[in-house]
Amino acid sequence: MKILFVVTGGIAEYKVVEAVRFQVKAGNQVKVVMTQMAKQFVTPLTFATLTNDIVYDSFEASTENPVAHIALADWADQIVIAPATANFIGKMANGIADDFASTVVIASTAKKRVLPAMNVNMWNNPAVQRNIEQLKQDGVAILEPAVGALAEGYSGKGRFPDAEIVNAFISEPVEKTATTFSGKKIVVTAGGTREAIDPVRYIGNESSGKMGFALAQKAEQLGAQVILITGPTNLTLAEDSSIQRVNIKSVADLQVALERAVQDADILIMAAAVSDYRVAQVADHKMKKDDFNGELEIKLVENPDILANLKRPASLKYVVGFAAETNDLITNAERKIQKKKLNMIVANDVSNHQIGFESNQNAVTILRPNHANVELPQNDKTVIAEQILKLIDQEIN
Ligand code: C5P
Image 1 (cartoon, rainbow, N blue to C red):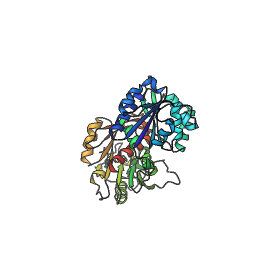
Image 2 (image 1 turned 180 degrees about the vertical axis):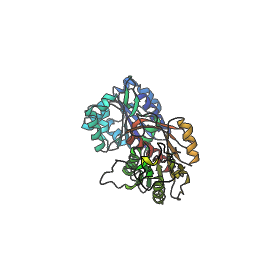
Image 3 (image 1 turned 120 degrees about the horizontal axis):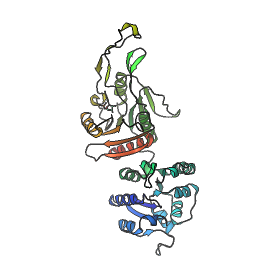
Image 4 (image 1 turned 30 degrees about the vertical axis):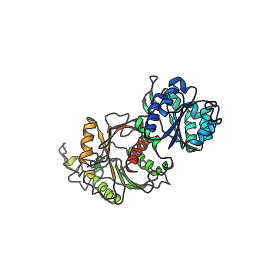
């Protein structure tokens, strides 16, 4: 793969040095274009040394090739713009080619990937968001920035994501972007279960279903055939969605639906918050306050661990569990990955109300046997979903 990095001027450039190094070590041919601003942050010599080539920064750069911008544009299988400044994104979205880097980008028909990194207020600026939308419509792949501490002391969305996420995004085969999971059947469970006490009362939990829905929708976008088994939620799917939705309430319902759905499935992602206990004797009529002497005891019995006990068909190659914890996150997740025989567990700290259950955002740690843990910093659940699916893709495809 011939990868052309276009480096524009931002502090996240030092992280792009690592990304370039990773792609060179992975056996790719890599060349680097820098804007004039970019050279203020990292010296061209750094990239030149890593790529064993000159760094291209002006129309006069190469005497052996008088039309360097066209030669580079034609050479690349993909162009990676990282970090992408608000200015450069604006130029790309509007077809402006007023320097060497932007001219190379406009002259190329190669797949383009943009990795924006900037201050949170710049990122949220409506003009920048409009430009990002335009790029998406133009078929440009965008790796949304992460949320967290920013170099200038701000905190918010704008950070250049961690190396593992960046490397996975750049390494994704060009022709696979929309068809990563085509021909694959993925079962996702979402939301919380309800265990009836009587016909109108139940024991439930705070799960909103948002993480599971995001996973199902992203998997669909990536070409999978998706079955979404969900507990009660207000969330809806688009009218033209191909996702097969199965509504359940209790753990018993979930077990029946899941056993049916996983037949010939390739991947199971168990994001549902499953009740560990159910009511031993569900009352067949609405219980009356006066039936008890100011004290009501309800006996609970343990539910089966659905994930641990699931009969896995031969087609099922990859099983993902979730671990929502309030303490000892990693230790508990490590125990569960073994006990439930998982390929991956997504651990999140639900004691932090900025993230998790009701929130649109999440921050998780991914654990896999024989892999270093991967931190996915706070971001929209749709972004976290995409990052999880890309890690799964790396392992099964
Ligand atoms: O043990 P814990 O409930 O924390 O495990 C979480 C994972 O196991 C989740 O993926 C959840 O969907 C699944 N689970 C299950 N059956 C249960 C409890 C949890 O499949 N009874």
